[in-house]
Image (cartoon, rainbow over all chains, first blue to last red; front, top):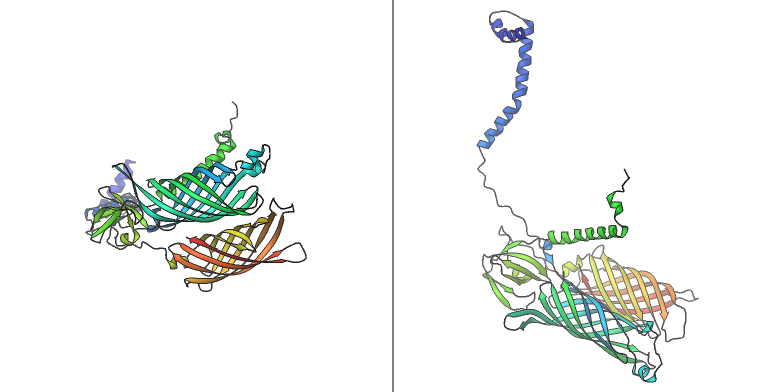
Length: 238
Length: 259
């Protein structure tokens, strides 16, 4: 081993001295190649170090992202539940439970779909005659659905005491739908007035009074029936 | 050692389904929540009124000055809820927020539902009421616009007559040759089924179900924002199992919103 190293280091001296040794020159080539291989990464690092020492003088623009209006959260839908009293002509008043969903098209106009269920009470005739039954139990189930256009006619603020101001709105409703009445579906027009009391931006209370009008021949002759509903709703905007 | 089943298998099937639904819903909610942006804009007009609510009936309670930066939080119809740097929150109409600029001082395209938006609509949803051979008809429909000229539509209707009522389910194609007109006529062709039930006060007779085809003529009337009125006349042919087919006229009018 020692003699080998000696040979490598001595080879140049030997050349200068005119001593020619074939094996020595090959060893030098191998050693230089190995050195080059070892130092290659260092050179690259050295180059990058040079780059780091000399930063470009360009001024960076602040990051600019275009405003995307379609990514802004929209809250045009309003859904909720309602309960109240439905007074069906000749059949007395019964409680009512329903769901409603609205889409606000403009600040003044909205469209709304509603579905509700109630029961028919007993007519005066049934009460007075004792045992007579005009309808079976199944036929006493009443349900309706309607699609209405709503118009916010009086948007404004309501004040409770001196400290509290709530946004509110009075609206008109006009629509059409179908009512399951006495076992049959009848065409129904609805018209009414509502008051929306906005508790929070996304939560509202409503009080609604509506007339549901339909024609029926259930009690012998065909006549227009007016059925009044007063209800309260709790709705959320999303 | 007993061979234990994997954890997932030990969850009851119903719970697994519920968990999957909850996870899917969360994805939707998370996207809606976190996918939305609250951009910052700068006022360029001398002032910008902020209302307490999203409507012109709600009073102005604060004024953002020129150069002030506000964050847009959300939108309802054409009103935007903004927050100033001092934490004041109020509503600004589209007409006013239009003059704001982005961080780089560039104008922003706030968009506006217009007649052009209706022409370029993809989805149209609406409701109409009318007369179906003496009976009242109520129809709900959903349409998908393939091009401004062609709309494919699915509709479900309720028929309410004096002696019977029924349901009608149809698919149709609408062709509008002049979509750019404010009152734009269309032709429609479609087919479906009609089911009728006699009223309970009438002597019992059988429920019927028949195929029905129609050709129609109507018009879209662009009103405002996302509101469109629609009127239509249809000639239906009910393909009955009897010797003769029945011809039925239908008139209807209604409203659509579009997206």
